[in-house]
Image (cartoon, rainbow, N blue to C red):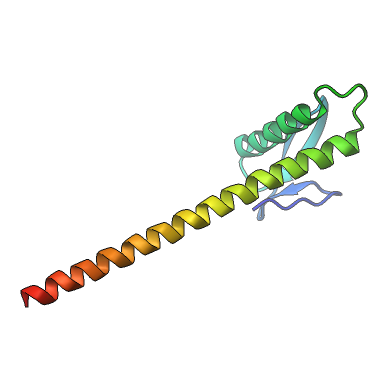
Length: 110
């Protein structure tokens, strides 16, 4: 889980340590318990999304770019959650079918 404090810029919980990242050409010091490679991976993803949103705009406004990138990231997250939920429901149905089949076979043998 990512938590961000705008004053402290903290990711994760527990003992925090700083990691310097670059997003849209600006450096940010991010403090958090997550390891440096994970913090950089998150920053790279955000940077890529912001660049994707700002492509083609004559003079992109940073706030607008950030909001659109956040909307795109939230959309991806929600789609993945939905797909995961559907997968879990399918697995649950198949598991219940297998249990019923096993129960049926075991009771027939008894």
